[in-house]
Length: 172
Image (cartoon, rainbow, N blue to C red; front, side):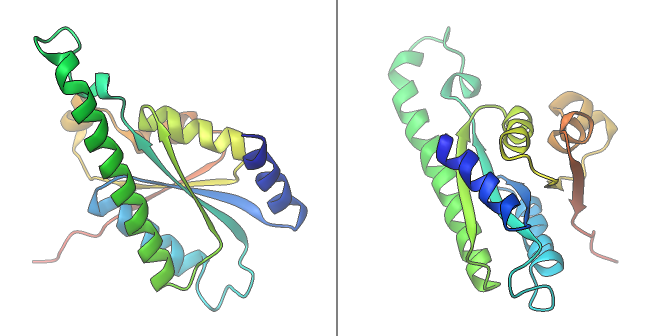
């Protein structure tokens, strides 16, 4: 943890602000990452780029996925944990591929266990980030109310500028 704080300090010392991009396994978050790379890390902006890029994904806890009170839950928990670890690893690998394809190699990747809303706001605070980028699933008001919206929560609780990148809908 001290090394990560030093990384944030080092980025600030060399004049680079920290940008956190929150991703999950959705096409919307990968679109937000690609959009960010094109608009903030393109060759026109480089060579050094204005930001230190930190990509964060939240890995849910196994108990948030299944009820511990369910019959046989204790037997299933190790399998759920394994699947959640695998999904998080795949998300980070895809992010690495996207960054590599855009020739953005100076990136930190982090998997943090917990609810995405809290994980992203805590990452912003820990890194003293100036900007948080998240994708938007484009849910309507009812779905947002039922499912909760990570982007809406971050827009209201993160201590930095929050950019919500919405994937354009196809035109008919």
